[in-house]
Amino acid sequence: MTTLAIRLHKDDNVAVARKSLRPGGSVLDDIVALNLIPAGHKVAIRGIAAGEPVMRYGQIIGFASRPITPGEHVHLPNMALDAFEKDYAYGRDAKPTEILARQATFQGIRRPDGRVATRNYVGIISSVNCSAHVAELVADVFKRNPFTGADPLTDLPDVDGVVALTHKTGCGMTGGEPLSILRRTLGGYARHANFSHVVVLGLGCEVNQIGGLIEEQRLAGRVRSMDIQKMGGTRRTVEAAVAFVRDVLVEANKVHRETVAASELVIGLQCGGSDGYSGISANPALGAASDLVVRNGGTVILSETPETYGAEHLLTRRAVSREVGEKLVALMDWWDAYFKREGAEMNDNRSPGNKAGGLTTIVEKSLGAMAKAGSTNLVNVVHYAEPVVGPGLIFMDTPGYDPVSATGQVAGGANLICFTTGRGSVFGCKPAPSIKLATNSSLYQRMAEDMDVNCGTILDGSETVEQCGARIFDLILRVASGERTKSEAFDFGAAEFAPWVLGATV
Image (cartoon, rainbow, N blue to C red; front, side, top):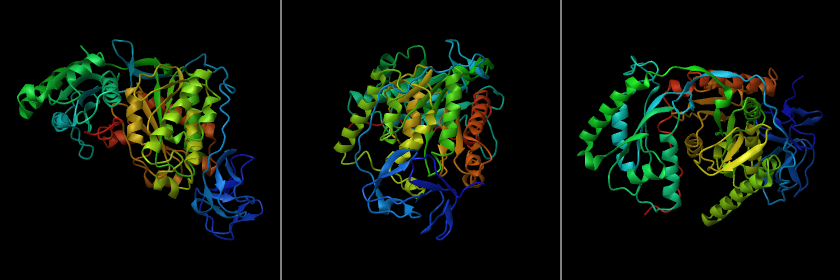
């Protein structure tokens, strides 16, 4: 019999409501709800004294700010987060990863340099916001209408599209780290296997000079570049860029898909618009799929550093070395200092949607988010948009804001994104396809045109985490082979390009 609330660990003193529980209704065993417990929210399953830890996943997620009675709703009015000691135990839980003797395969696009693409786009990248509109004018010539079906590329079936990636920076910025991060991001996209050809458009007088970008990122011979001022203005630049794209589209269409090993997969793991079910259904299921990717010799990227806060000790224990674990702790120290400088706190649960979904503290969200990474070793920690070299689980430093985080992952080489959501995030990340995983059946049914996978089957009891993970892995292989995701049907993925902006705007 399926219970009305889910207790995740024997040490937990709270359970999570499968559906809204009315006062007086049964919760678990002989406990009854004392007040309304919204779906996905926590309910006390034993008395919790003031100052006592609140436990979920067998881990501390906060402390009772006043005495809590069994059957009582546990959330913002009676729970808060205070500092607590964490045992990093570097490498204690690391163990050899069993690589499957017979690897899964998918139909990928092998580039001349040996890398494998999951999509085949032509890219138009702006060096600065001042060239953004011109880049979009070029891409609009080749744009497919997702509602009417009109497609200027209908005679080029092996080209997935022409995409303009624009942003709000590139000038009025300081040099050093802010410029380096932007160039690293743009360089990662310009080199991405899912682009057959790339043209970079600049204005001509910006801080992020195209010449400097090409030299620093070693893009000579990889990209075509144009400055609006040197080209003679908007019209001439658009005409020249459109002519370039028309020329390369024929060559881009000559690719073909071939059978490649799943070891060529580089999966960016994302969660956004989370709820109280994220750490029970979609994230653990994605974790099971992540383990399958790694066991097949592939690579997965966990990110969103501020949303790993409070749970980082679980990753350091899986680090392959103390050095790797200390890299992660150093990132936490950097973010702590960054937040203090900005007058904020790392332990603040910043999203109203997270709170409405039942997540009280950032540690509670972090513990649930961690589940996406499965159970394999942490093999390396890299900075934002740095190239990712697998195989295995890699941690990339990024903000928690999903577009910025996913942009860093794709710049690092992710050729596919898996994105879990409990509130209903809609998202794409060109040139990488984005698979959306719903945490609950209600969301999946309500937003069926946007969600690719229903992980609510785990809550319903009709599927185990492992079974759902296997289903996700199968979809990953199909999408990597060319099957369209729901976000691709709506042509998501260009507007969501969002490099991390650091430093002063001057």
